[in-house]
Image (cartoon, rainbow, N blue to C red; front, top):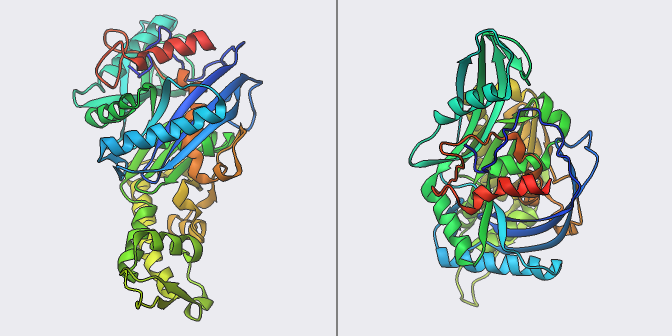
Length: 443
């Protein structure tokens, strides 16, 4: 039922992938601000005690990034523009790595990503739980989630129950009358995924796998304790902000809102009557989400919109800049707080939130988040990956790094589809379906 057609079923607590081989993985992070292609070498390693589920060392051997064009709030608005940016990013990464990319693992933020939990149970008649029973109950849960206009991105069993006793991680070999499962299913609109695949195909590349952006960011930015005890990762991008909630080692909830760092920039451009690129520079150099007593005295120079040589730059106080930025940041954080509350996962998140993504780098962001979310907040940078250039070590590259980590945890998903393989593009034997095969052969 997941994207990855495979003949075995991932149990919630899988053994580390027994790997004897090294693999090269290529990924593509298509965002509203930038498009990043990374090529990495995955080498078998001993499992890390700090980073969850890592069975391989990841070394980035090629990276290319370009400013995004043709994408608005995660949605493709111009196929030609996206295609050319993808080509440029992939080309730069290929040249650096000295090899050619044919297929990639890509992220998806568009298509109104939804997160649902489905429950199913089967009768055991007092017998021992066998692999076939697990398969049957996973298929039963998975089939509830299949809709015509939506495609399944991830399906993760979050916990089993035996005779009403919940919280069982691996029921194999246990006895009982009724076996139940809770299945977390992440879906997106099929049309958005088709457009994504179309862009990549037009650049003469194919899609190897699709990962929801919030899942990828969480994989890159969270440490083991956070994933185990419960934590929310909030990825603040240019056009979108996504939320992922992890607990007991698994992704249990995702959400997204169409507000990001670019909205702060446009607020500044409007409020100060300046060009978008000048507003972006002012935000990065002078912007803050926190008011400071000295801001009233400090003055910044705002370039005028017109081309007229006579137009003098406008002098405004830093306090005005901060007021414009704060209004938008506070609105965004309040929206995120309400979404977490409404999801019912607020107790699971507890006191831990990790902010990542390019917009999380704004001065004062973590303090503002601490105040509004009323939780401990840290800025999360991508972890456990070697070979990243200095410019790519910040929170803005979390999604790309998470895509690189994803193949190591893909086997936690159930592979129970109607008629075998399940693909988000509606074609059961597509390239996506070959990912499971690749994982089986590779690891």
